[in-house]
Length: 569
Ligand code: ATP
Ligand code: MG
Image (tube, rainbow, N blue to C red):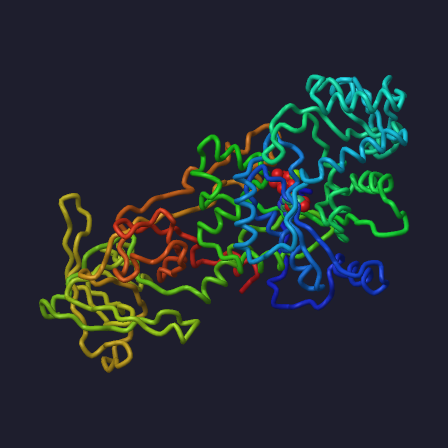
């Protein structure tokens, strides 16, 4: 699993070839093994979806789309301990937001009765038995990959006794952990999953859909293939760690198929998505939420779909990313800068440009008449001519970014300094003639002169300046809170250290709040999640916490593109 970080192509060199799953599907269709493709996305509702799930969603839904088939949503809710309706709702919202609609909506818990009937059938066929051993005893007698396991002393109970005990388990007559139902397969199989795997365990917990009806719940392996079968799924796609479960998936199907030559679902494995600088197991993400390291599942630093949405990532960017990562048979680690690159690429096309100043200093244009204003026209989106222009008022008092001025600038600093000139974007060239400091010695105010002949678009001044900076008219700004996000972890593989907890690698600077940034007044009432490019700063969106009185923006991604650098562009 820990191969080196992988750098897939940038997608420009389109490869027409099919991935191995598409090739398989085309063969199945051509040779008449299946008439219609049916896939499914089977989340367990025990947490929010993350970017890894987005890859599986994209795969299942886009295959169904491409081959005119169907993709179902099935909640794999066989373990009530961690499952909740809140997660069901969040999962549905996230899939829809990604742009997909499922054909059928199912729950594995809808099949509990049928699964139970199949368990009874297996007992009657002599292929399942109730084991009274404890979990520890079962584990201790399982053997090792090179040494066969030991058969349970309860393995040869009579059918009648097994039926009676299973029913007792169902009715709550036995304590949790005191009995399990096991498939009777082969304690010497080289595949450990075939050494009499558990089918049902006792859990006296209420289920989010079936309430207290059941005291036993089926194991994943006894539920998944059968659920696929009930729904007519043709291609059951899952991640590589299930490859070793496939013989068991097939074994259970063999026991229940009415027509061994007829329809059966097939499991195929693909490599899961691994990203550096993050963790992706729901259990770990839950810990971050429960221990308050983040504000919730949708904290903009989380690798969850809801976190990314709140952060300003677009569904289109996530889909593009999933496609570029591609489908492979081998696990690898994808560089997170590829995801950021896809986000930037999409936002560049769609974002309204805005001037915002995060750390302002006042500028007085000493030769501009008091009380007057002049309308400048700013381009809304250079990537989209239809987005048009907007007015921005040039006046005597302006703001610029503190870092665009230096008292004693080096030669190559092409912004402002005493006696230096710079262009104010969409407006005039200005020259700094003086500056004032406050009592702490901090620069407080610049005095500049503007060059009236240098107006953008009709510049007759003949002055060449190397720098262009953004600015704001002091009379037309509003303050906003800006949340500057950085990676949640400052280590490439936070969960990959043997003796250290992944939380030791939390980045203490992953959130920096800028309280009193300034933005163009016309954007303060932008709707939640609306996207902007703050010129020269990065892409930002409106956080749902935002109100007209207190606008709040999130840094989605900076303008600097580490991925383009890696690719040598
Ligand atoms: P986690 O380990 O994060 O809890 P999971 O695999 O237990 O994830 P499920 O809800 O069972 O989560 O997953 C639903 C589907 O999403 C499964 O088919 C699973 O294989 C797929 N999936 C989960 N994580 C990834 C990933 N990182 N890359 C690709 N597919 C994934
Ligand atoms: Mg799972």
